[in-house]
Image 1 (tube, rainbow, N blue to C red):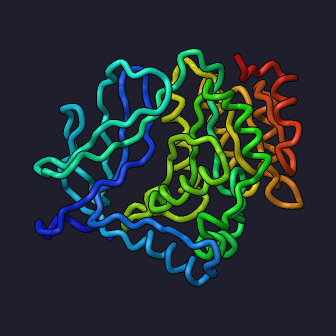
Image 2 (image 1 turned 180 degrees about the horizontal axis):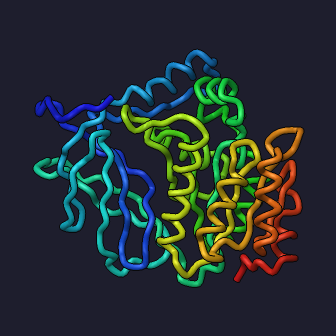
Length: 321
């Protein structure tokens, strides 16, 4: 729920998300909340306990119009409490860095916001969907997606083992940057981060979706617009780097990625799609896959990611040093 800062006695807190870099700036992202809500599931807790904990992630009290500062740059949280800070790079080398962010006028300690700087010698960038690509969700079915999301925990959610293996190969021990794009809400950022860490999946900046009142729009168009805009933003932040897009055939990823290929001027080298259902890609996905191949984009599809690395190698998409 939208909420301005009305109670000055309740000091707001900062929640930092994983940020990313452009050639000359660091992009810091986070949110101002009245309190931090994070789950700590027990190994033997049941689905109802999971449900209560997951619901608590959505009962956030966002705080709008709060001045936030980092490296002399100041901005204000928007109506949903979100913060976007673009600060100059100060010689940061490749890898993850923490940038101290504070609330203006607050004497409390600054909060470290993590930000990733790509390796200068990176051969390829990777942008991946999350639901049914990295993690089993059933996002192509709304009822199944909601049940899986709200009755699971960071200990029970399943990351596909083949996704971990393939992403590790593509990441090449830190050489190539990894980004995640999903229509899941920002409230799940901390949760997804913990799920990925527990599974050993490569960490990367996440581009999630704002479900705030007045901003959320349902349907495939909103899903596609969010994903498409986020991917174009990542490509623009890495103008000299070719990319691999990873997704699944259950949520219009093939069609979205085809649109990106048409607009990205050859920056997309390959697309890898997991077939989310037993019936394989639908007609729209098959048409999009064929169109991308005609454009010269390598497209690999399958029930799992077996053979994806070989397909990239055969097509001359070099991901290693």
